[in-house]
Amino acid sequence: MELQEKVTLPVPIFTEVDKDVFLRQIYPERRPAVLRGMCLGPCLEKWTAEYLGQKGRDKEVKIHVSTVPQMDFLRKNFVYKTLPFKEFVKRASEKKHSDFFLCEDESYYLRSLGEDVRKEPADLSKQFPDLAEDFHIPQFFEPEQFFSSVFRISSCGLQLWTHYDVMDNLLAQVTGMKRVVLYSPQDALHLYLSGDKSEVLDIDSPDLKRFPEFVKAKRYECVLEPGDLLFIPALWFHNTLALQFGVGVNVFWRHLPVDSYDRKDPYGNKDPVAATRALQALERALHTLDELPADYRDFYGRRMIQRIQKRTYCDNLLGTTTQDSTQDSTLPSGQFTKPG
Image 1 (tube, helix red, strand yellow):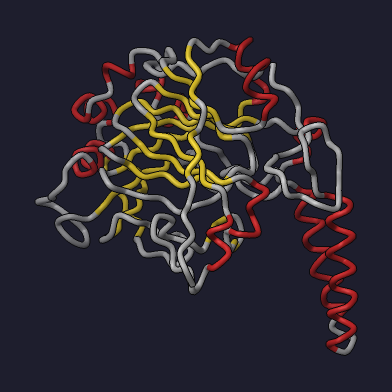
Image 2 (spheres, one colour):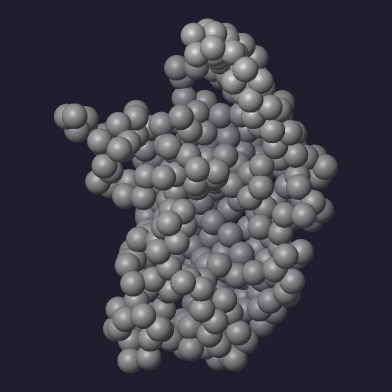
């Protein structure tokens, strides 16, 4: 198959963004946006590797460790290990390690967890209270909408798998630089999904024999600098690559009614309750079709697809549903709760 020329679209950059600008100009569009030059607090100057180690000290953290920088959650090409926070930061900021688990150039990644990992979402103010004092969360949403604040620290060169989240979030880049590639929810059919993750690990040089439809996915890209915030609307796929040793904080909030979400989900990445029920009902319908001969399954399967398209596909942000979905859009505005 001949490789098609991939067009990369830039994520728009906004400066001098306050709550009013965010809510009026950015949030209703339901598209990613870089908010540059934000006031994130003294963390921008303070959060060196040495300072982080002093503040985090011997608090134990569970981390991902891999012999390769391109981490693959589906095939688990990494191991989970536990280290004192100070030692973890030291290793993650190095390129070669005198102390290591797998090899001297292994890669490290921390995604902070709640105190009870099965019940509590991550909260920077609870797990790292001293460091939380340095970080100012932008007040773009109401306090009761807050879900989690996730510490993310990674080695230089570390790349994370492409996935989506079901909540809106802001990714704050505090130190280092990070490339982020994003794909619209409407390109989901081209991303070869397994759950909430894409099977296409190498998005820069994909195997088009295995993933021929991937070339149809429209790619958006940005490079985050210290002080940048990236608004990632719910359901937008994202893939991150640390261009330098870097520290960031993800802030997630509930933009749908609270009872839309799975109450037993401390990570905030399970599909909404109604979506889960719909997918389960679809599986039951497909099992029912198995009772028919192949040509009948094909015929009624196509009819089901057509009905789903008519009922659910959107071609603009005003909530109009159509049979065709050729334009790039996201969720209709009536399906989310405006923060603030």
